[in-house]
Figure 1: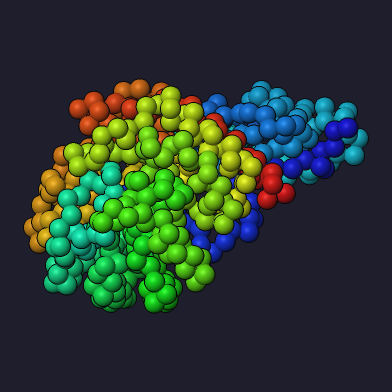
Figure 2: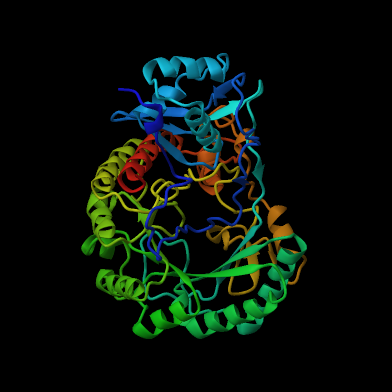
Length: 496
């Protein structure tokens, strides 16, 4: 029997999940240049008037999860909403034509105890989650430029692994402290001038932990540099995980570092893609590093590169990580001149392989959202016009002081530290990280602010142009509803 007072809406925006301290998501140029929705301009009049007419957003994605209705607005930062049958019944009454008072009178026929206040509260929740809007014009998303600067410091070119897909030719070269300080001077001054409020400072290589004293020195220098400003520094270490020791774990915890650790499979699956220089496997050492990160409650994320070799074993890796409450991010292999042959996966195989992995996720649903983690370059938390920060708010600095718009373009630097504002140099460079409205096949897509057209470099290398959709578009379009469904199931499990 219908009861208005029993209407419930679960939402990614309001869910109070018991998220563990170590959960964060990071992937190469993540966060540095995304534009984020500040919400549609909705004015909630209290109390809502009986003459009010409201309409569902035309871009709403709808699907049923059991007896519940799942809704997702790709032009909102509200995430996924799950309506129980009572709330779903109310929601379906709104068509932009009928007045709120009329809808209420019909609901009273089903529930004599229904109050107008119950209805107005539920409608307010619909509006807050960007499911309904008032007025004759559909509100447009207010996607503002990010105020976060992403800095990738390539502190060393040396590495103890020889991964099959790596884009770097390894040498023993290391960034000098002088180049590091000069780099931070230029980039943090640029951040101040351009009104940035946060800097994601990523130390990478090679293997950055091989130069930990330099990492530590440059981090402290950056903190001193922003003293007295509104800028917050978030240090992130990108590591293969094999060099994490008890001592480094303690230091990472002490300095409030986040860590992105690489792992592509269990046992020999990982070892085939990520062997040591001597050919021996690295899994056991990575697992030791993972254990230390969890023991010291260091925020970390496991970065998984999907290739033709490890895709069939993805379910086993997902189960391993989910059972130990280890957050992870999926990255598709990016072909490059130094990578082994036979690693690329076509869309049909990707879709089939990922769906096998998603079935495991459904079995072991985590308490942290995966909306920005389980489909390469796809982020459903908030609409954005750039798939990553490359060419926008993200600067890669080589150990030599040369700068590039993406770590995979370090062999084609666009300038050097000391030769003008590095961020402006990047924005005027060859890499064009276009908005989806400027890409063929993207402008009319309902998911254009979710994937933003995918990695611009992959598109360029595939089609020799930037202004078209990603070669992975079919995978994105097919699997985005799967990701939404998993988030709905997660809400039903944890947010009730």
